[in-house]
Image 1 (tube, rainbow, N blue to C red):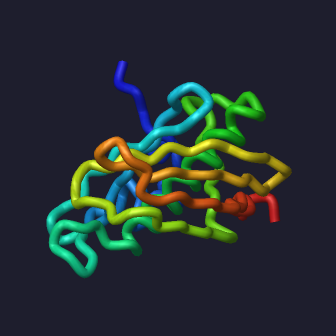
Image 2 (image 1 turned 60 degrees about the vertical axis):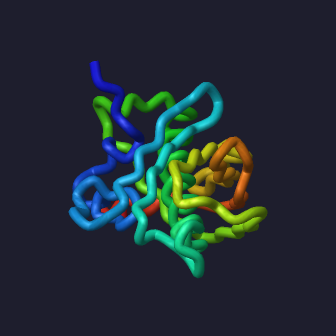
Length: 155
């Protein structure tokens, strides 16, 4: 059995995000998975994902990775808390209400690992903390507040 990523459980109408949408042909298509109480995502940037230097990752891309990994983690964490099986019910979609990124060290254009921990879940709000590591060193940290997208069917 192939392990599916959180983002693979988004309904089609919410699967077009540039960062994590499986239906966006030009997107990054990041994939996030549980690793115990943390979620993990590995991303291999392309040579054109650079910032001011040819060997350093663009800071805006780092923020995008944190954003999408946190959103996926929020969706999966809420489902886990509610006892929802994503195989039988699509994950609820979350969007970013707030994101703070601290860039701690230059990030090489190499495979990065994102790790996220849920700090708190309160109704439609989920606070998620994310680290971005490369070469065994934490390069950036993000603090996010994710908000569940209201179900248009329940309006």
